[in-house]
Image (tube, rainbow, N blue to C red; front, side):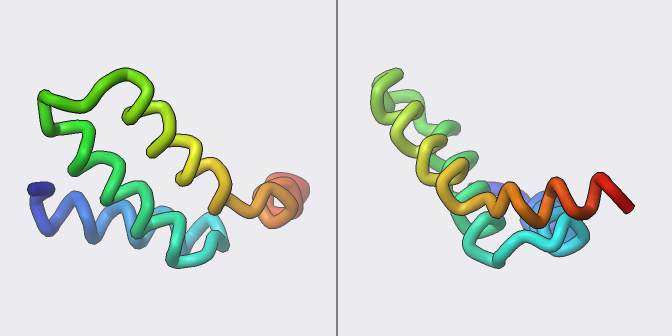
Length: 66
């Protein structure tokens, strides 16, 4: 289980990057699952893909242009 301060920092960072809340939720879930030692590399990769799928690239590119 992740420390609440780490979760809070993830949520704040995601918000500052104008990303949807699902990105934070998936990052937190991914990190929690990664801390379990019995996940296969395939499982880890699939969970990370879910995080990538939630990220809004267009918003990130617009923020970088400002």
